[in-house]
Amino acid sequence: MPLLSATLDRVKPSPTIAMSNRAAELKARGRDIIALSAGEPDFDTPAHIRAAAIRAIETGKTRYTAVDGIAELKAAIVAKFARDNGLRYDPAQVSVGTGGKQVLYNALMATLNPGDEVIIPAPYWVSYPDMVLLAGGTPVIVPTRIEDGYRLTPEALEAAITPRTRWLLFNSPSNPTGAGYRWDDVTALTEVLLRHPQVWILTDDMYEHLAFDGFAFCTPAQVEPGLYDRTLTVNGVSKAYAMTGWRVGYAAGPEALIAGMRKLQSQSTSNPCSVSQWAAVAALDGPQEYLADNAALFQRRRDLVVGRLNAIPGIRCPVPEGAFYVYPDISGLVGRTSPGGRLIDTDEAFAMALLDEADVAVVFGAAFGLSPNFRISYATSDAELETACDRIAGFCAGLRC
Ligand code: PLP
Image 1 (cartoon, rainbow, N blue to C red):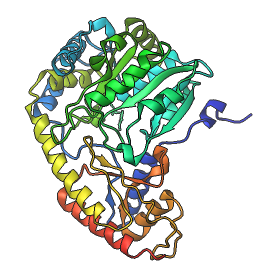
Image 2 (image 1 turned 60 degrees about the horizontal axis):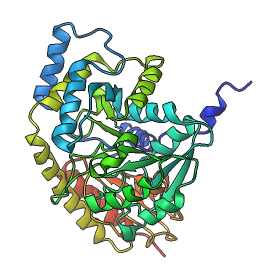
Image 3 (image 1 turned 45 degrees about the vertical axis):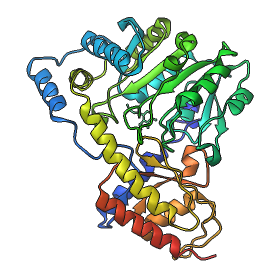
């Protein structure tokens, strides 16, 4: 009898985590690695949020809580959706979990039956297809094109829908491309979905507050109220408030779905960390002005990285609307040989050679379902980004035909 289940055979470990581990391993051996692989802000959780957590500890908020979130946090989430997105929810329509990741996982586990299809535009966040597989569903990957800014088109969406489609997994601004969908882009997709009542929208709004050049974030339930009853809007505090380690994510949607997710969570992790929930209340109810300052900082870094990458012959890098990633296309470099003698026949070979020969860790595009590309997370200092770009440029200049 094999030790591990057949379910586990269907999924692969997260390649972004694998790449970060490999970079950390080389670093521990004394190599001067610049890691541009991890998807988290490089600054600390703001002081007022940390203070709220300390207060929670000191006032005994250290016991089990309601399975899917304390009332105070649900109230803060209801207020956030009204304030930022013009969406009205009742606390009974809100679910809080251990990160956006668990909330997405719960939603898929609670709704998918074998053979149910989930449309995932590629490139996608690495976890989406594996979560669908774990839940027994079938990921239907729909590639996007650089010419469309890596955005899903209504035609491609329409062509991917079948009677078995249960969800469209939607992510704007996107990990890994940073592509954001404007109001008109979302309308074009919601018009398609209005014609297919069996399809629900699972929208991952994790990067809502990281938007550049005046990009006006919008979310499907806000754009098309006719889809409110079949939309689960997922968000979290990890990226906007520099709270990746606290593990708090949330969603709002139809009450019956929220109840299903609660049932699942009650038999797995139960409540998210009590202290983290109080920290999240402070994040959502506290001052919001500094989010724009953070976005401005990331916009400057985006400009630095995009400018440097596009100056490298063989690399094409679109200008993202948000998040803290770029996803350059390297079709102009495939087929060459690295200074260390490796054939760059795939983006994985590119990323490995870049790490081993130029000490820069990035994540290869195949992990996100669209090649040949790589992802840079530019959530690091300007000085590190400059040095990393020097190294990437030097490495690319050394590739031989
Ligand atoms: N969704 C996207 C697109 C992400 O990039 C991430 C984190 O990398 C998550 C969800 C999960 O965030 P968390 O579980 O930290 O809330």
